[in-house]
Image 1 (cartoon, rainbow, N blue to C red):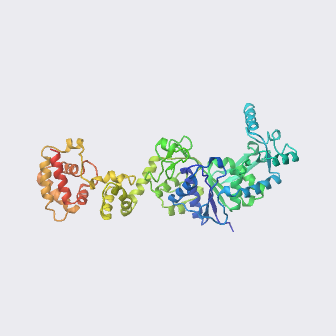
Image 2: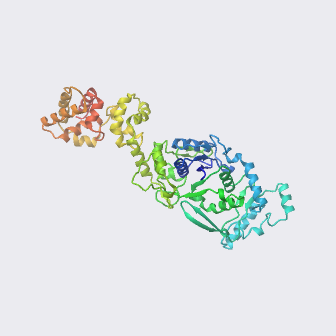
Image 3: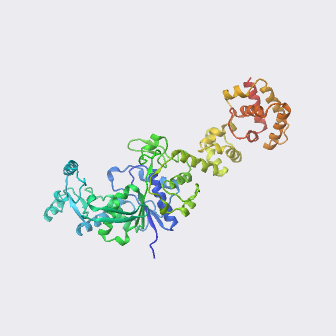
Length: 508
């Protein structure tokens, strides 16, 4: 019987969560829910020098806003706690010790100056492998070249050291990736990666392999940038004797800039005029501010739909998915290998589509704080009707005010270009005659208003456009907006007549 699916999202709190990271979390979430498995949130904070205050809480808040929930993790605990790597140091120390004892890792005492000199020499010689590798380790200061008693003395004296993996020589490392297929890499092209740093913390390579094993992770779904590290991780599983427990791997394609030229970075968003973070972020150290999708007016379900299609294709024509539908449709086999361009205009289009599909009552509740901030307190029923009339023209909730402000206050000015075209000599008199007719409408409904106005136009001998364009100008102040009879019904008889008379008095 196959093990139950267990996946993890393991961000580093070195800054805000980029949309590429949110996509990784989303794909893990969809995969876990599709297979009835568990999703673990693990914080990988072993790089202490790059930690940013507040970043971990930002990650938690962002994922919550996106609707991505977890079964275990740093914020809720679970059977494999702790889920913060800085709290698991002694676990890693134990496992790196076992690698040293088994001959799969070694101590290295090289100074920064010696390492810099090595890099210089390799560059000058145009070496095929310009790293600390099998080709150079025998001439460096490490436990492979030093007598055992000297190694013990250096350690006891507190000499700084790192622990490096002993990369095998002349071996072809083969592995399968769910997205990439079969991959082969020569070990001679790989370096002896540092597994344990001089500050007593593990590197990502050691910590993530140990944690994935101990937490019984069955599938590792992560970004393409980690694919070059996979040969080392495969060898680590083998060195520990965990080959049978090694998870299946899937490396997702990059999220590219809108022009397709290069990976979308954390610095691209505000520079290019769109957010790259789910929530806005202010760096507590530098004060640098970055905009967020939530604060820019995006709905979380629209945001999630946008990210789902960055690399995944359901194989159908359907473009709009609820989270439940995404879970049902998702599969790693339909994730492509090529990078996906992020299209900010398509993102806006998605949000517009989600907005117009939302229930008018829900939109009215979201819009109400904006209207109240402007000094108005409409009834929920009244605001619901208004939202239903204008939402087709809006992309974000904030846009609703621009599309509906004339429902709340009469025009303070009139579109002068439209006045010169639509408000001719005699138009004012015509509008006043229409006012007299509108007073007689028994019930001021859209249908009754339309019937009365059409009868008036037929009797006046004037063109429909002449009367209705002037009427819209008087009521709205411009030539845009919903159907004029809808506008009149919402405004009510008294307000309509008052606005027409005001326009007549001002547009002489």
